[in-house]
Image (cartoon, rainbow, N blue to C red):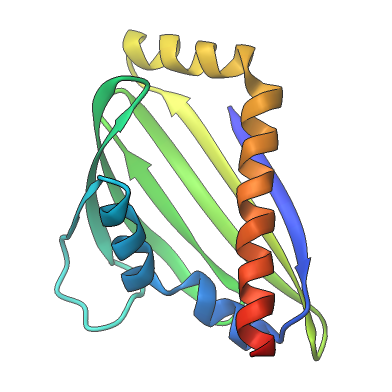
Length: 153
């Protein structure tokens, strides 16, 4: 099952790339929302091989997810693979410079079940795909607005 969206941002590609790769900031946000985040690599900066272990509650159940950076190409984006006991996923973030001050952010998340439990979860998401996609797009839109506001400041 795939979710994807794109947003055009009034900021240079380098500035947008710095915002989408602020992994320390994302870790703090996840911790504030009740997730447990553990960095599992020894890299001083994010890049290929960076790895995180996440534990959070989703749909009333504790979920464990391992995320690993598989591609990292500044300032054009990155790719990360995720794995949990019942799902595997691929997160692809791409940046395209539309002009010196405008950047297109494209994000896609592809989730595939690996167990029967995973199939049930994905099936329930398929029933609510329209709502889930709207919420996903809205969050990315808000993130894009935050990047623009930070760039203008």
